[in-house]
Length: 484
Image (cartoon, rainbow, N blue to C red; front, top):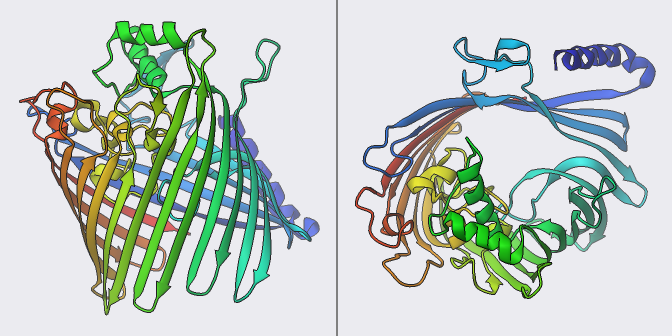
């Protein structure tokens, strides 16, 4: 890694000296952020200790402008970690050369590199770039994706219509002589119309996954690793035993094929002091199993939200409702959990219930997690159960640089297992935020969140009330971010 860094630095110096001759412009942008997080009781157990830690990240994006219409864009993250977790003087590892400090020699991760070409017939982009975003932030899970993208802008009326086509390689499993027809691919066609006061669009997609896992197979894999692979990290649902996990593998295999379609219309507009934002994401299709006697499963899932806003001087009010379908039964003939296909991490409406920055997405209530869980394709319990959230909030601009925010949301699980004492009441979360723009490029933000938890957290793990669970938890989060 050190050699790579030296080569990279040398390349940058060479490029800088060669700029006049090559007529290449280089622009840098990015951010440096330091976050502090305190969770009062991550697992909601009475004997939990307070979790209190800090983490950081440097992000740098570079644009090499070859011509006005042709660019090479790259991005890397560095030192993305909990502070002093990987380079402390007390942290050492043993390898084939003996004891060695876990120094900062492998902390740079290049996650994007792609060509962007504004051709006479539209925009072409090829390489590794941002993906899994569309319309509003609802149901978005921004990640780095390998894709080919084409966008055609068309002037229409007072606005502009954008037609987009994307071919994306999710996983490459066909390399080598032993396996073929095992890739996972996505294909998108979308249209967005942007006018002065609103924008709207419709996205259609086809997920052609040749090597996939349904929620039951995914959970069985986690149960297997938890019991047979040392130090493995899992988000277990105790409803499945080791014997049941092995039965899943024996009856329908460890993987399946999935052919799923997505339809996602959205609208976002502002009309005077009133604003309206809404999006619907609907998936449907089938999963196919290569085991005799095992029938295909239908995939049916949806997520939607509607939010209205009103500006009243320095204050902005919001009222909304969000619904993500759930499926608490991994053994039936349907897959209906929208979170399994699209958790929607980017929306992050409520810090404890919807965000992954605090770590509660995996640890809340002894591993039930929150509404986004461990992300796409994971069997995280609260995520797969789905949710319904009614929320209201207000943001108030105290000065040009300081603003305050309050939001409260009442949440229910969309589906819990039948029988026993399962409860869908997840409680009410209250968030208070403070934002201070110290300079044009330096911002400080703090959030205090409190979840007055319901009986869902007490009953979901076992089906009976767990007396050791106290569903009330508070989280303190603050961040200093420099942008450039």
